[in-house]
Amino acid sequence: MCQVRIHGELREYPEGTPFGVIAQEYQSQYKDPIVLVMADGRLRELHKKLKKEQKITFVTTADEIGHKTYKRSMSLLFLKAVYHVAGHENVKKVVLHFTVHQGFYYTIQGNVTIDEEFLSKVKAYMRELVERKIPIRKRSVTTREARDLFRRHKMYDKEKLFRFRRVSRVNIYSLEEFEDYFYGFMVWHTGYLKYFELYPYDEGVVLQMPTAKEPTVVPPFEPSPKIFRVQQEAERWAERIGAATVGELNEKISGGKIRKMILVGEALQEERISKIADQIIASGNVRFVMIAGPSSSGKTTFSHRLSVQLAAHGMHPHPIAVDNYFVNREDTPLDEFGKRNFECLEAVDVKKFNEDMTALLRGERVEIPRFNFVEGRREYKGDYLQMGDGDILVIEGIHCLNDALSHSLPRESKFKIYISALTQLNVDEHNRIPTTDGRLIRRLVRDSRTRGSSAKDTIAMWGSVRRGEEQNIFPYQEEADVMFNSALLYELAALKVYAEPLLFQIEEDDPEYYEAKRLLKFLDYFLAIPSEDIPNNSILREFIGGSCFDV
Image (cartoon, rainbow, N blue to C red; front, side, top):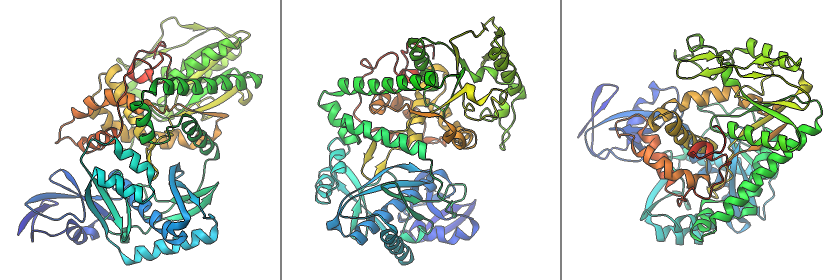
């Protein structure tokens, strides 16, 4: 028998008891399904068995880790159903592209028509598998065996991925006869996967799933057409360069072709920025360019590069950061956890911002404030500005797409831009790189360099940052006149060199350890590249240093 401490209570279970059996005894005490356990601080899947005395806590689908586990497992269920309904001989390739609303967007290549009839059959088979509670099995094979396996399954992106893996073994998940590789843990069996919906969209299908906030409710499908088109454009860029997956990127790096890839990637971004400048000028009466985007999207560098393009077109741009209009720190509102909420609109002195902007629009001379982030106070240092013919303000801040920030300015005087780092690179055909992971790695590298923040601190506050984005940025993204994707295909290979030492500083006893371990495992997919060939005006320089702009 093994003693197990749960909720402060000491229990005894036979050695070899699956964690899932223990979880079932406690499920009634939890609102949401238990999908993983933390045993002595180590994350474990429910099929794993008790071997010694341990302290156990439960992870549900309301937890970020549990929610990701649910979505990952749903992907396996969906893929199994697609191949079963369509027939393996009719499916050339199923590709998970990116997130659309709360779901995953897939395309299916081969002799398959994605229509209501087909999706109805796929959904019915998925429901059948859920009812049968089929175990999701896990086995370990050598890396060479994994490559041979995926070549037989015609999953060539995975075969290419494992060519560059340094680890000697790979975990393979299977659902009956269907085998695949996934980046992360899975649920115990298909009975956990009750909540989903399928929607035909564009040329593919969206597997819609619950949010971590409401893990048992599938929200209505509400696509964002503008952001979807930007994501598609990003994939076309990746295909044009020939690096749509990590394996293809690693081939470029190992083949000595990364320098050209960097130049092409940067040129594509500069071309896009130039076209945005053309649109602004063609709009006629624009006096305020409003730039918004989530954390670590590269807003500051983008605003400077756009200003250079506007200047090249004969305009006189003036970059302004809305952060300089923060209220003094002691006046910052508190969030539901009692912490200062720097993400909400009320953290900005909206009244003063509008007074200054309308005065500038009238041609008056205005002193622009600076926010002292050390002292937590707004200061005035003699930064005067007056707008004349050809002058245009380039304003960046998380609320810039929300008209409540600039309510006194005429709509025709504003040109709105949404910027985000929408990763166009996938690990392989069935494992996507979450945009949030790319931005988090950008941020922990930048904050270590510019603010002295540890990776532990950055990871600890990331949840609060994400909640602020969900409330204050994403609801307004479709209001933008144009969108700009700041992600670069090569950036994770460059950030790896800076991020890994920071992540290794997090101790096993720290609450942020598992997230650090996950990111380290993720970065291990990439071959590293040096930063010497990255231009000094690159958006990536905002994070790794060496920018020609004051960022």
